Structure formats: C-alpha cells, structure tokens
Length: 268
Image 1 (cartoon, rainbow, N blue to C red):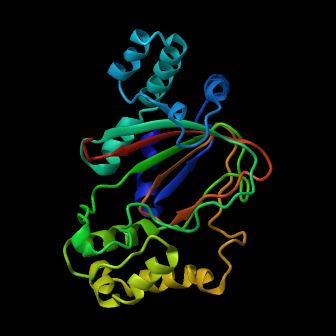
Image 2: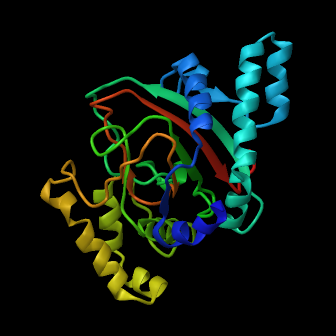
C-alpha cells in the first residue's frame, strides 16, 4: 500500500500519509520514545539500524533498550519502508539511521528555509563535490499532533527537482559552485544560471513558477503561514526528498515526538 505514494514523492518531493500507525502502534512507539525523552541529536535518541546492533544491547545488559530497538527495527520492515526506498531510488538502498526524539515546548529559533546536501561556503578545493545521487529519503512518523508553528514542517513542492539539478550541475561542472543552503542562495543560483536550467528542464515555465512561488523570501515573509505548511495528526507520516526546500517549526503549543528513518543508496 505504501508503494502507491512513490509517484507523489517523485513528482512533488513529499507526501503525507494519514493513519500510518494503528492506534496500538501509536501507543507502543509513543511509550518507547517517552521512555527516553531524549532531545534531537542526543545519544539516547538513536536506535540500531540492523539486528546485529540490536542484539549487542543484550551483551551490554540493556534489556529494555534491546526490546525497544527490536520493535523499532521491526516497524520499518512491517511498513515496507525499505521496499519503498528501493523503489524510490530504483536501486538497492540502505537504512542509514533511526532516531526518535522528544522536543519540549519551545520558542527557540529553528532552521530557516533550506535544502539538505547543499554545499557549504567552503572553497571547492577544500572539499569533495558530492555525487548528486547521494541524498536521503526521510520518513518522519509523528507521535503527537503537529501543525504550522507547532512542530511540523513546511515544504515547497517540486523544489527537490531544482535541488537535484543544482547538485548535478555543480558535480558535472556545468554551473559554477556557490553556496545554496539557504533559500535565498538557492534562488540566486537558479537566476544566475537560467540557461543551464532551461536546458535541463526543457521547460521555462517550471523555472518561472518556482521563482514566483518563492518570492516571499525576498519580501521578508518567510515566517508567515503559507500553503507550504503541513499539519499532521499523531500516527501520521510525512515522507520527503531532503533535496527539496523545507523548514521546521517550533513546538510552541505542545511537546513533540517524532520517529525517523533515513534511507540512501550510499553505503556507510
């Protein structure tokens, strides 16, 4: 059933699946993540990506961790996430990491509009230019209700196509390298290299549409509610190509719990 969403991800870069978890599954995994209550990037927020790592928990006498890790690993198999990733990439993919984190209500700053796998501001001779195909398919499973300005994400549809075109152009030295992590810079690299993008897409309208859609960033309206914002009930999943332009939102109204699986075709 999950495979029905591949075309939507390929076309728009993102898809939301309501009721991804059953009520019983939602309760089970909410209890697991609550048990650790670990913030994002904390060592306790990560879980083993294979059975070898899971069974090591026994040898370390971490029996509760073993049970939790086993349940989380079984979920990705039950929901056929690996099959989804293989079909999305059209080749064998690898589970790179699993984490589950707990975010307290906060008004702290969050990541602005950006794209992942973007090159930093380093000089090209100081870094290795990444293969454009080395990116993540991300699966966010929300264990609490989230919405605009309360812990959910925003995503600009079809922007993943530009993200890939930029990575490919830089990798093949068809466009000069420049930083493009921020949306402002992402737009600039498109505007500065219009001929490349016209040749790549064979359709000028898709370029004009994207520039028009993202004009809000030049007007200082990046924090206003928009059509790019998502809402999701607990138990829903959002699956997206990280090369698209997206941002998070602060959990301003309630605590947030998320379980994530990340896949790529690149071996660790």
